[in-house]
Length: 270
Image 1 (tube, one colour):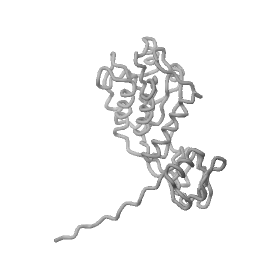
Image 2 (cartoon, rainbow, N blue to C red):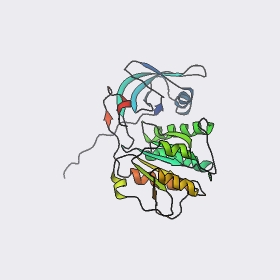
Image 3 (cartoon, rainbow, N blue to C red):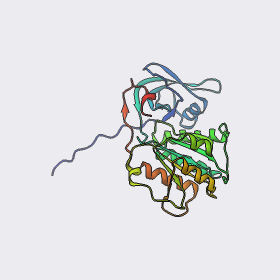
Image 4 (cartoon, rainbow, N blue to C red):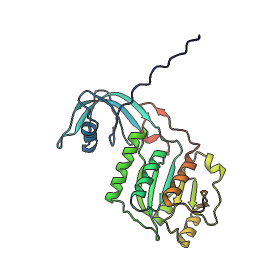
């Protein structure tokens, strides 16, 4: 009877923690975690001095570090870098951005969570005239949503954070430059072009409020080059439409690649 080859077990995955900017880390350098991440390390996950963990920042840098000291209310948790992993970008190569009129309450949090899981690059919460919720750029709600993105990145092992902002409808239209721009609206719309699904160029999807866009908002979006696009069912809820658009745009996109640690993350793409 032929012997089957046994595969060695996969190495245990380390718990992950976020640091806003690791800079240019080197083995032996100390890094401090903020109060919230430090509390998660010591109280929630009960790590102790000497434990090894993985730390990532918003630009794709990853390091393996050893817990040197546990923080308190006045002191940060200190880690010592053991191994520099370079820039490991697990997000899709294609850049997909969503512009969404925010739905109410928990539906917005769910939308942000699932967009981050899919690998969306950026979500803009737009203010439309029929919108049921509105957020300002410095809103505490935005801070809460950004913390949700960090939680998703830790769990899904993504090393770049999806970004979020809030803009007026017209301001957003004037600044979006994606090669493909979908105006997700069921009236007078066509299915997504096959080329838009396979092209690696950036894609933006614009999703209106529960009551739909006003006629002049639709006309203005078309004037800026947005193509009316149908996402299947005639009527979808705001958060459903956003995720359908993101899934369609990202389905054929491969993940990012590992870049040596000497590379500058700010130079990786546009």
